[in-house]
Image (cartoon, rainbow, N blue to C red; front, side):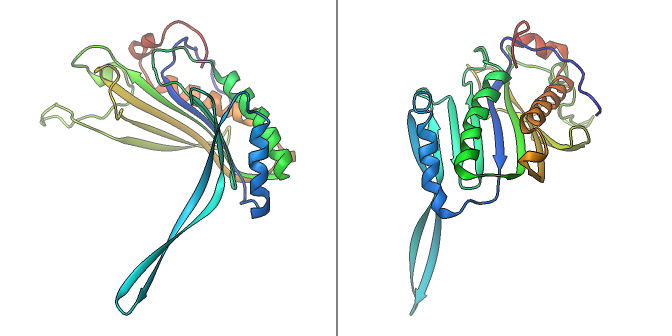
Length: 259
């Protein structure tokens, strides 16, 4: 895909959560306490701090009796906004920024807010950890699409919904669709997941459209423009979103705005 076509934006896009994820090789243990210091630079935005651990359980058996021991290792820290709709994760193996919108009818702050906040914290993370190379980057949007009314035809809203073979009862109870696509420009794997949402919004039919754009490759940070690359991932995500929905679905998201 040499270039992404221009796509419309929406004032109330159905984003449930947007994620920027950057992974690196595991940091040496002595650097982990510095991740907490890094987060304190942004305490006014993310005042809630949570310490993350990894747990391992070992079993010992002697004379037929078994005992278990649980060991906890520091994994990193997460820093949350007061309403917990924004979260920065600083881990021993990378960085994640999560921006949530629990109410699908609410307005969305847009990609620029997500990108700029993530970049500001990432720059601090790089400085503290001396990160010079990354091994995986991703932009992921989890959409929650609410369709008003009772009985609906998925084909009216989704371009590729599940199809029940002719001759069988046409009453769909549940489905789960996952498609993986290799995309050449930008060089990325696109994972498209579609399914009924775990929870309905105000008892209305609600569906998840999860779009994950990923590149797994070692890249020195001085060899490419990380944030321009993530911009291109977001553009590809938008193209996938538009291709996945019919106009009847898009009218649900309000007039043009931010996505």
